[in-house]
Image (cartoon, rainbow, N blue to C red; front, top):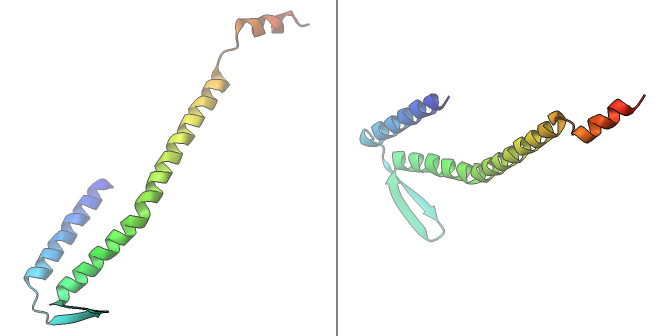
Length: 101
């Protein structure tokens, strides 16, 4: 699955480079409050995509870290429960069991 992600990333970078080099799109003006930017349309689209990716990662990374920590805790709990379940009885307990009728 990771191989697919790397291939997709390379394809996206290639498409972005192709779009920027072969862009004959007119410049557009972006106005926000007191700022005014004039950039080619292809840069605006690529910048919007990049901003969307960064915002998505900003919200996804803390959740992924929290999930990994919880997974580690659960694996440790399973390990502890398995050792308790499969731990052999001590000699004192076995001796008491054999003496009972």
